[in-house]
Image (cartoon, rainbow, N blue to C red):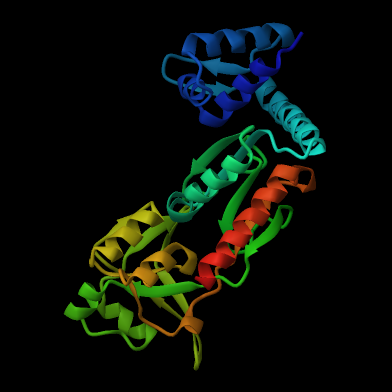
Length: 300
């Protein structure tokens, strides 16, 4: 008989690319996780991974089995949510992928409040500025800025009117002439970051004369948008970020808006799922909860 926890170890290992990392994420010992994989392989009569002393990769059979294992785990999780919802409770696990800045500085405390309302819920968060693969990775949903490139994904609006904002610390603006047009940014230290596989260094604005895109440069580049915001707060340059990410800094005066608000490029925040069956009661409730928090943040 195939055990649920063995399938979970297999899926987590395929996602992590490492048995020891999968064991850590599942709060198991490496030995226990290894035995779980061996049990599953014996039950299926195939090798799921090709193992060497330096690497671990899926075998052909493992590649074929993975989507079925992911679907089975998703179905079991949906069943847990359905039972909990029938008793007007939310339980089971909620696996989310979130961008770095929004995740650390806004979503984390909001999810703490959400879980206080639903103590039977287990949260699994993946915080990264590299978009997760919602089809292959064991995730329920992802918060993402912008319109999904993959039209097969389901996107639910959370903050549909959110835009980018160009801003800098008062200390930076005291040392440098304030830019009045996008072209002026070529003379400024612009704080860049990597989103996905691309460096965000072509900044687009909606000016009264029309859309204007300018290539920017600077002495700091990172793969974490939260770090770019921190650099801006410290006075190291100008940053162009989602207004949601910097709204607390703007309200506290740590950052100052440089261009008018309507200059900013649209950056709608959505909750994205792989397919309609992923819209479990817990996913829909967390989306509504976060949507209300975003609205309240703008209204404060």
